[in-house]
Length: 166
Image (cartoon, rainbow, N blue to C red; front, side):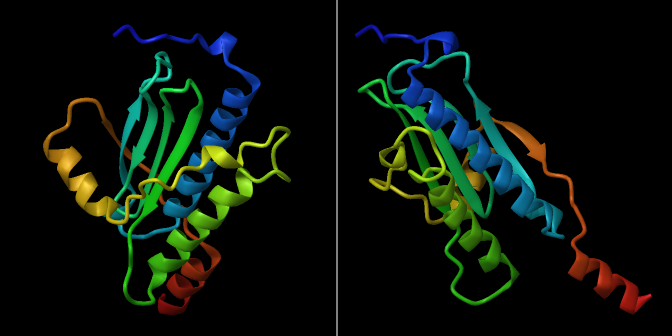
C-alpha cells in the first residue's frame, strides 16, 4: 500500500494550524522543563520527521521522563496531537509542571486561540501516563530519536533560595 506524501507548502490550512499549535505546545513544554533543577529530568528524546508527512507517519515526537508530545499524520490525512504526562501520586514540584503542560495543550488548541477550529486534533484515544518508562525503553532501543538536554533556567524562587543559603 503506497502512502500519500504531502509537501509542507501544500499543507491544508487545518494541518498548518495543528502543526503551529503543536510547536507552540512544545515550546511551552521545554520552558516548563527548563525550570527543573535535576538534569536527568531535562533530557529528552526527539524524533523529527518533518520532511515526511505521509499517512500514519510520526511527524515529530518529544519524549521526556515527565512529558510526552507527538504530532502525527493520521490515515485520514489530518494532523493529530497526542500527549502524556507522568502520573505523580503525591504533591511535589513536578505536579505543577505536568498540570501546566496539560492546561497549555488545551489552551493553545482552543477555538479562542486559533483561526480554525482544531480542537478535534487533540486525541485522547490513547494517552501516555508513564513517559519515564517510555523514555527508558526508547533510550535502550533507540532507532530514530536524538538526545537533547534542555538548558536549566533558574527561577526567581530558586534564586531566592540560593541567595538565602549563601
